[in-house]
Amino acid sequence: MILITLCILVAVFVLAFAGLRLIAPTIIRTSHKIEAPGIDRMEMVEIGGIQQALYIRGQNADNPIILWVHGGPGNSMMPFLHLYQYEWENDFTVVNWDQRNVGKTYFANDPAAVLQTMSAERVLQDVHEVTAYLKQEFNKEKIILIGHSWGTVLGTMAVQTYPEDYSAYIGIAQTVNMVDNERVGYEKTLEMVKAAGKQKDIKALEAIAPYPPAKYGPSYLAALMTVRTYQSKYGLSINMDLGNIISILATPYYSLRELKNTAIVNQNAIDNQGDVLRFLVEEADIRNYGVDYQVPVYYIMGENDYNSPYLPAKKFFDEIVAPDKQIFFIPDADHLPFLSKKAEFDCVLLEEIAPKLAK
Image (cartoon, rainbow, N blue to C red):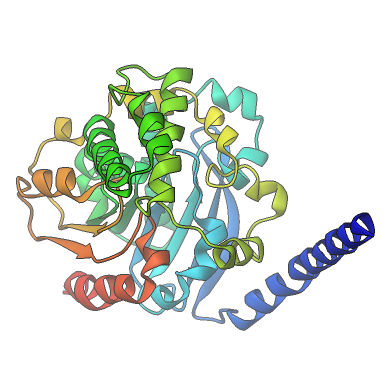
């Protein structure tokens, strides 16, 4: 009887999931269809010698262009965009780009061959080439760059190396360097665990001290996963509930095959990032690019984000000299503030920052 009941439950789940994937994507896509003079276009563009995926959406193609540089490395935001982006499309044309060896770009090329090309210099040049393509395609002198997490490192490198290409830089979950991020995040997590009095959790975190390790490798990744596990458990990282997961699975913009190759779903996807991940862990530090910016700079930070903690970002932000700058702190937001506190995030982007960019 128990076996029969279990089989019935599994069958119900499979049928419900199949229905979700058959019906929900069509409903979402149809209900958010964009007509002229807007744009709704998925395309492959040759960037850096390979095919790279761009998904471009906006209600008016003449609006300012946002290039979204996702985090990870390996975490495309393209499958999530139906959860947060639609409201932005009235003011901006938003370009989601799957970086080298991620998501749609991964499946459009030979991943093993692309892995051999992975380096900080190569992905920075990719940003430059994507930007040049968008400027030409939409007849724009400059575009806006939004970076998230790892994308804030890559984005900062881009706006400081090619400032003539950008009208503004927006860093969400801004990272200065991984050493400071991980040290502060670990200390906060251990503090929370000790306050909860959970001896098993305390021992697990203390066992990986000193943290973070100096070098990237299997031991670093193991320690990182330990910290992320407890950050998630104690509300200091990305807080995904069942509703979020179901919503992601309903995405009309990604197949399940593509979804499996994003690091937020499959941690093995980080292996596809090769030397880029080593660079982020061991070398990346935006302080090396100076504090003098030729473009306006805006940071958006979440209170409960200890993947990219507020204090290291604020310390660096205070040193920045820019035509305009502002840092926004969203209470109770996690590492994905545009999801966890969407209304508050949209208020910052659309009511605080967007009017500045229109001047």
